[in-house]
Image 1 (cartoon, one colour):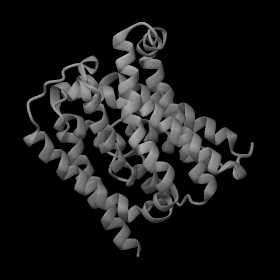
Image 2 (cartoon, rainbow, N blue to C red):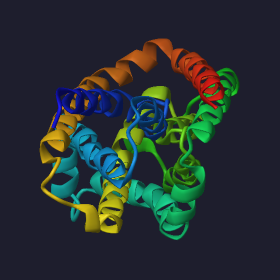
Image 3 (cartoon, rainbow, N blue to C red):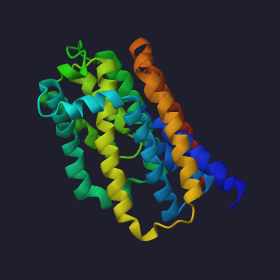
Length: 268
């Protein structure tokens, strides 16, 4: 193994950790990063899958008290019951569609060209939603009704297109359903746990034939770096968007998508 391999693993860990919970598409960034670094093949895809667990762990750690309280109160506390029910309801639409459309999505849509276009379109949609969103009525995750959770879950289906962003689809969808920015962002964090965990386990099962101990050091590096970077994002994002909104991420999407299209065109 060369030092360049360790550097690539660290860079991909940074990309995953910083982008997983931002409305900029971590999957899209990893596809673009793999393309720019010249990394391809099933082993690289497996690496990208496994390091997502590091980002999941960051959410579980930051909100460990919330998850523990919900688990302990599941049989007796109405707020805990509604919290868990909303997460499950929001998780189901993408889970069902993902099982049936997994192969088509992976084979047809996982392209740098799709990512670049989706980044640009998504950026403009964020700018529009920030301008036209209705006045929020749900100011806290505990106030969310089940029909709102279901609507957010349906929005999450769009995130199966690389470049759309799971966080972007759920947060923007929640805001259009009258959820406050901060509450929408937190709910996106919570929904990420079963969604990402389910997708990761499913992908690992599909790729079990190439699971080996070789490259485990690289995966460990990517995992740890992704965890640390995601930890920073999860701890700071709610406060940031409450003060500044999502406009900066929209313009970033448009810029990075345009640069990606330019580079892809030059490389043809």
